Image 1 (tube, rainbow, N blue to C red):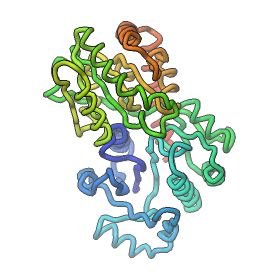
Image 2 (image 1 turned 60 degrees about the horizontal axis):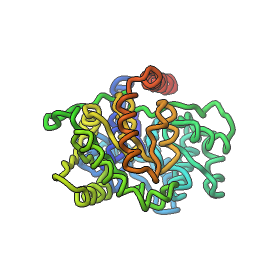
Image 3 (image 1 turned 90 degrees about the vertical axis):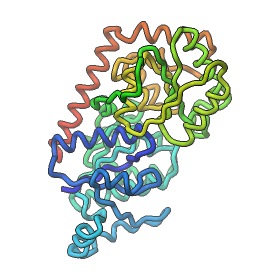
Amino acid sequence: MLIEIKGVQFVNKGAELMLQAVLQQIQQHWPDAQLVLAPNANSSYLNRAKLGAYQKWSIRKNIIDLNGLSYALPKAFRHWLKRTWGVVTEADIDVVLDASGFAYGDQWGFLSTKAMAGEVVRAAKHGKKYIFLPQALGPFTREKDMRYLKRALPKATLICAREESSFNHVKQLIGETANLQRFPDFTNLVKGIIPDYYTDGLSKVLIIPNSNMISSRNQHGAWQQTYLDMLVNSVQVIRKMGLKPVLLNHEGEADGTICTLVQQRAAGEPIELITEQDPLKVKGIIGASKAVICSRFHGCVSALSQGVPCLGTSWSHKYERLYEEYQLSTCLIDANITITEIEDKLHAAIAGVDAPDVINSRNAYKLQSEALWNTIRSII
């Protein structure tokens, strides 16, 4: 059985953590399955080869999608490609596990939605399974997107909306169909690894920036003017509390630039910057820290699911829903927050992290993630 994990990469540590989470479940439930990964700018051949993954050959450029032609290729030729070059086509794949995280909706271009819709339709036609793992979806207001999705989504094997807003965005298109369900982010089952170099974590507060906070994608436009000031003010608050601020780059060059700006603008001694390549170690670092001030979704999930106090910022609906689910909406901060309010919220987050309702929520979501994989196992 060939299983493609779609939408993952090796630069964004959240996307790579989702990859690791899926790999762990494949090893547990389908140990004989063969892995397929598609190349992209953030998924190099060497990274894919280390996992023993076959390379998916995609015959698509912009609006032109010829992947349907792969089903017409002779099986002998496809077997030769696989055996000799490690290359497979869409026609060879038995199951697609779409772990895109947040790739389909108005904040993104229509090409990815169009390509996904075509792939879902073809999978259904040829008796293959296309499963959307829990992810943020929508909103969908563009006419072209709505047309593609209304045709395709009813044919998907399973659509897992990560939260209520995403569920409703899909429901508005296709109704409450049997294949549309809700499950939380599934990386909460992954155990982190604390690297040897990260010591005295309980004296440290991580600051995890996100370049999307100051991009045109941000639904909360005021952040473009205040975001960097908030991060610099957070450094001051952390030091005032007798703790050590540490910057953690959760994704690549753009976030690294923000980290550098904070280092340059914050007064006082130099701020440590961690750029860790292993997503399991990133999660371990978060889990070993006193608290986190975070703008990356999976950084927030890694903190909340491990019982680490976490103040979050938002650039899409997925953050509001996440903090509601974990009973911690008061820990989500807005663009006009003052330095005094940052301090008050950080103190409150640390004091309230082990409140009974908070503990119950994080335990409940781990149980739901286990139920997710039991559902998928029964389907496959």
